[in-house]
Image (cartoon, rainbow, N blue to C red; front, side, top):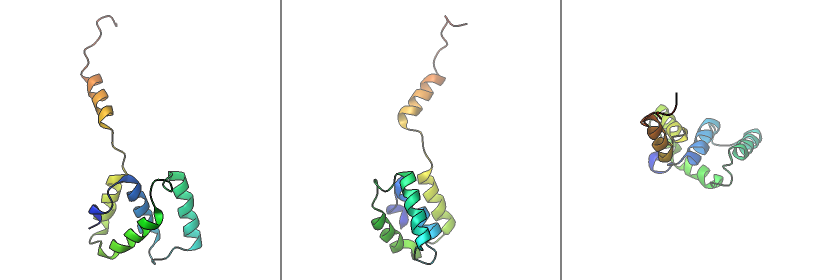
Length: 103
């Protein structure tokens, strides 16, 4: 199942792009140009191997049982989440006692 294959934000971005643009199982030259430009903008080309991800996507594409669930899963990986340190600082700020010296 794709949940055991796609497990990080970078992969999810690439696989979502493949899913949206690879309907006929081939990229047109315009789609390849678009993909290349987007990968540079997202800085994915240095963090993941696009050829391997495309092969992986093609390996499970026909086995996606529910497209909406698949897209929701990818979006859940893409959606930025606060880091634990950030949450700690927010909690600390919310529960901090007021400074009696401040008006």
